[in-house]
Amino acid sequence: MRIHRLVYIVALCGILSLCMAHAAPPALQNAKESSGASDAREDQLYSDATRAINESRWSDAESLLDQVIHQHGNRADAAVYWKAYVEHKEGRSSDALETCAQLRRSYPQSNWLKECNALEIEIRRKSGDPVQPQSEQDEDLKLLALNSLMQGNDANALPILQQIIEGQQSERLKERALFVLAQDESKPAQDLFGQIVRGEKDPNLQIKAIHLMAAARGSEAANTLADIYSKSSNEQVKKAVLDSYLIIDALDKLLQAAQHEADPELARHAVSELGALGAVSQLSDIYRATSSKEVKEGIINAYVAAGDKGAEALGTLASNEPDPELRRRAIRNMGAAGGSSAVPTLLSIYAKSSDEESKRAVIDALFVADDAHDLVAMARAEKDPAAKRDIVGKLALMQNKEATDYMLEILNK
Image (cartoon, rainbow, N blue to C red; front, side, top):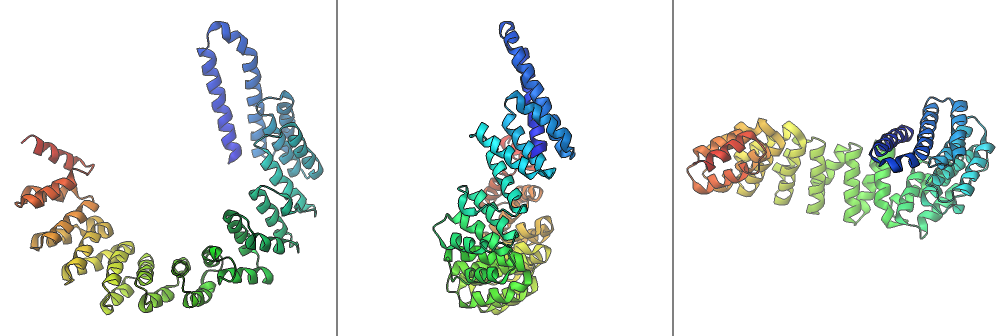
């Protein structure tokens, strides 16, 4: 992708150069013609070279890149890197390493040095002479070197990883080292990873490790995660486990947490994840069984993520829930969960309700559902000035032709 982007930039620079030449005064234009021609020639050569690389025409690419390098222009350092890349592709490892050394000598400030360093790490790994991570100052290159050692099953890799994770390195480097560790399926690596997951090492890495375990092992991680949940007293760790249950589709584990968790905040979090899994019938069972208003509020919110079935459950609560606050919350959420399909139920509630707060909740829901048509009709029919102001206030915020026309109608009265 980068090669294609560079070709595009080269073409764009050529167009801009041409435009500037036409705009320059005659006295300056002649002075710039020679330099402009040289730049255009370099751009064309570089473009041809990158095209050859994309097409795996290594010999053609190297010849073109040599011409760019000999011009010592703006593309020269990039051409040196790509020459090393081509030599590596042709199996000429020593030539590629020497070309990267040339880039360091000739262009010590080049943005392409990091690319050459990464290439060198790859070449040395394949040749059996891996770069030692400790010798790299750049964090990205340190991780590349470390990952290279891990792929080569080098015995030094794991101790170095452990030193990074347990040392005074940046959190960014530690997290990336943890990712490398999670990919290693050897018993020593997985033992170390397991210690981090259980919070026996750096506690700041535990949450990251929990997420990585869920992504890497899937349903196989369920029992380990459940054990961590039961033993931890850290709310953030427990939330990470609940989030991971969603990743691995562990409905039974989430249901257990939602039903038996004493902490209302964690119970609400479990309920929210059940909504994301579309577990409407299980949520409805919990709703009927619980006496916690906080949990019921969480379930009403969770229904929004559950699609049409969630919207149906909200409609039932919007009509039948005896607690007015919960009923209004259900009404408001119908607009987000059901969209246009919720409109008939919402209009029926509005027509039958004598509760002004419930009517406002219907107006909010129709606004969220982007139903300007029915809001305009309600505004025209509404006799209560306060309720009408509420509807008009929502219409004023809607980018909709019917709403705009109605605003003009009000202004022209």
